[in-house]
Length: 242
Ligand code: BT5
Image 1 (tube, rainbow, N blue to C red):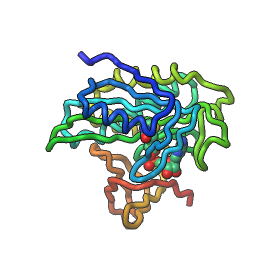
Image 2: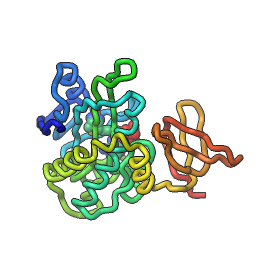
Image 3: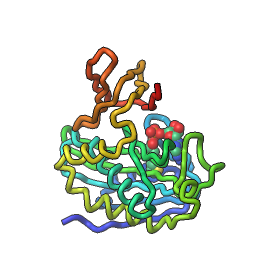
Image 4: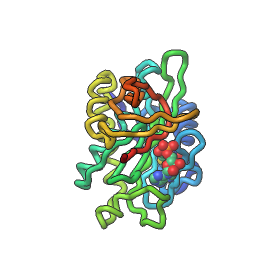
């Protein structure tokens, strides 16, 4: 039996992930959800900034999954497929996925997912699942390469309804964490670079080739020009159209 959702709404926060992380350390129950209308220090991976003006959906879910820390990357993929499905069901728009953590509409970035966690050896003390989706922003409120639901559907969407739909979808699929191959199959099925030519910029250097799939630990498999399969665990991916 999973606990019920507790949604805590703020007008303005630095980052919903930071607030959720602090609450987790203070023993807040899992499925506490922190939402903010505006984030003043929204974060992406590494030191990247996440633009979070009013009009988008910025929230973090506190989870205490009973899995080994090796399974944490799966949570990000599970969240991506659940968010994708909820958005598509609610809007009829075709939301797709890009490795490792992007939600994409057309060729532009609609949203992203940021997992932060505290682990004790092999076990997970808690995980913060941060999700950002551009909903009602106009073009001038979006960074280059980004899109909002409104830009494509040409209408405004109700943030609360979308939040509820995403949370319900994540909650009802959270037991699937035991089924890594199913999560990865569904993720790959909705991936925009399946199987296309890509380049992944790594912390050091870059790898290019045909993206062939994702491993159960979340790594991307790339077939390089020499025919070898390279396993890439982190980096930024772009599609190559040559
Ligand atoms: C992500 O990082 O895509 C994860 C974003 C997670 C944001 C949520 S909002 C709620 C929670 N609280 C937080 O503080 N964060 C989470 P990454 O893959 O590193 O992408 C970051 C890059 O996306 C930036 O360097 C920009 O190029 C681009 N970007 C920034 N803001 C954007 C936006 N609103 N829409 C689309 N792209 C954006």
